[in-house]
Length: 191
Image (cartoon, rainbow, N blue to C red; front, top):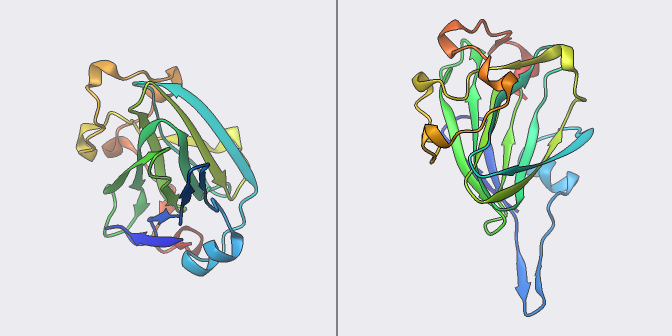
């Protein structure tokens, strides 16, 4: 597996070694030992999967302390634009984002550490999205930032008229109205 660094420390892309032949392909999608060698120790405890149609946008989600989540995400069918936004107060990259296209063709995975809001937009007719979390889902700790916040300057590769959002995701605040529970000095969020 190859580690690809991004402009924000801790947010990384993982590119697996894919073995292809006349039968199809094979790759190791996750190895605890390899992940820890490249990224560091993360104890994933829950796997999730969603299926969405073109134009669906999910996010930008996070869980508040003490239930924060780091995520390892990938698209196993179709194509998505996946985004992580730094919401750690005091971070030199606060409000900045990393975007990566994840698809069934490129097999890339995206690691979103603690202290980041996460979301994605579906660019194909259908997308099946899978992710590992290092903490269980806690609805009382659910939080978000508006996925359509223009101040974030995210090019979602979709026209806003195509965007399909849940009721919940339409109610998230803009970053300028958001009081983050994360700070760069908290050891937990630097994982």
